[in-house]
Length: 323
Ligand code: NAD
Ligand code: LMR
Image (cartoon, rainbow, N blue to C red; front, side, top):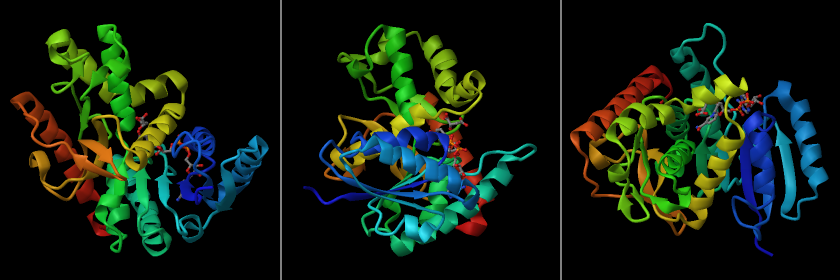
């Protein structure tokens, strides 16, 4: 039997985790022959609810689950963690400004960054889902000086998957016929879903759709999909967010089938200055990821890529005290 992989999940009693944990336990993230130890973190008021989640995991009798840890102590939750999914975050409350939300979450992610630094596996792969995900990942990384910043990523795979389906539906194709989708920048309404390098069944996607649809319909639909889900469901996306988190870690660990989008520390590629966690086109293999280089960037794309970079720099400035 393979050595179990320790998977830490924060916000274990929340709605995303209610999908995420059960799919990880079933082998969807790390493979059907990979045992896991689930290390679930919550805040004290949610520990009873977390107890209920643990009861349900036990009631599934998953063959791959070797152990379950449920705790309100980040040091315990991240102990020897190989994968850390930072899902738990403070939601935006009444009258709360974006800066207040940034600050409240910044405190959570600085504590968790320190705990990862001190207790996680030296090779831990971290995915931040909790919003504002890119900047939360930056804070966690800044508080984990003994870990490589490249180990800290944020989730734009949900945006990537949303974009794939929008394009597939428009062109009457299947998502598996599309390659080269890219989400640039922040997981927010400034993100830039870019089809300039997309091929559908080998043909340039940009030649298959009307530019007006692309600019006035596709881009805003993907950018605002999170808000549309909240409007329709009365709650933010959960099962689709969990599915995207599984895709992100699955590909990082086991390799991607072509280009995927991951928010990672900018390294100067495509003119995005270092210092923010920016979504790039990457290819994953052998447990790592690499930015796809050499793609042409036209004026339209450059403007969009800069707008989302500017927002990330503003978010960074709002939490500078915690970096
Ligand atoms: P939720 O409110 O249902 O669950 C969040 C859980 O986190 C709660 O149970 C809460 O008690 C817990 N929590 C809060 N602070 C914590 C802390 N310091 N340590 C551990 N746990 C803590 O929310 P949800 O619907 O599961 O969403 C979680 C986050 O994911 C939100 O910030 C949401 O905006 C974000 N999100 C991101 C994406 C993305 O694509 N990146 C998509 C959907 C949702
Ligand atoms: C999403 O994209 O569904 C989430 O980030 C929720 C939100 O606030 O948009």
